[in-house]
Length: 435
Image 1 (spheres, rainbow, N blue to C red):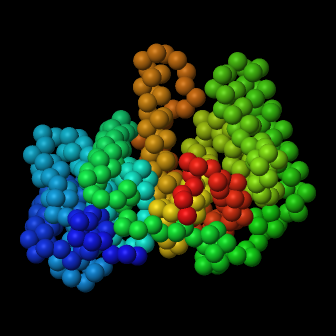
Image 2 (cartoon, rainbow, N blue to C red; image 1 turned 90 degrees about the horizontal axis):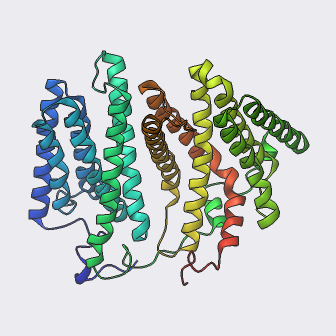
Image 3 (cartoon, one colour; image 1 turned 90 degrees about the vertical axis):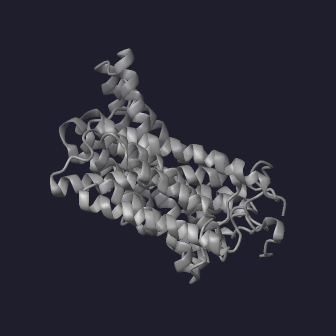
């Protein structure tokens, strides 16, 4: 890659070996974070400890990676990052303190995005970088709230008092992250060049990517399952018949929630067939069965089991998360290959899938929270709803489990599909860069 010239020395891709004054100010921010975090540890303020540890880890990452004390982010970022931590000290109550800290997730997400651009081969166009910041902020919120909830369970504390509180914390982190992503785009428009990188980075062809990731000649999911392809297709038809029966049950009992949920899930099972026939995408019987099992189990829960046993929810969430992760993988791999200025290194791909799923889970919970508020205001019945703090937190936990499963086990089964999608979309002007 061509090194940036003097006019772009302050762009995100600049060397981390910056001015001594920049490093001093960054180290000052780390010292403040550790000081406030240490006080929080003594006072039992777990949220401040989490935030301080996050600030210190992100601020010190360049120095550790480069091996130089002068390696640091632009001083504005670590200084701004500690402001929520300092502000939380003066907050009037525990909830406001947490709200301030979760809003600060946006700055940490921005800092981590810049570091990834400087320390790895990852390259994002501005719009994707802004989206990445929002996803990271939502994920920070999910991680902090989950760890705080576990802390409450282990020590008998009540740092997160209710589902409403945790949802407003997640809303704060996500909204601030979305705003930070927008400001990120506007701020770096002042630098030369249209993208965040000093030179385009070609995406890796899917076949090359598969070979490097040891995915080539990997058996398809259809071949891997202990059932013949015909048996898999028969099982898909049987599950579809079950979904039709659930829709009929909703009609007979005049339950619009069941009809809408199970009807939508039934349609989803036909999407792979439609895409295979219309666009010749290689959805083998194993992939179709995977999708159908997930939506069938979810529908079964919405009809009966969700109200009968809490654990059914914990079965369906990781399974649903695997589908979301698969979509995220196909999207980023397709963009990597088609867009010159988008590149996700091989070693970071599974982690992007995890990030995509966890952040999507946060967005989903916020959507359910909004529907609950709308239902309370209008009296209308909504297709989705939340069922308390434990429900929300276990959703986040099991979403994460599902994301890890698909990121570190399921990606090889998506190689042929991703390659076909890329071939189909190649030549679409809005997606393809000039090469």
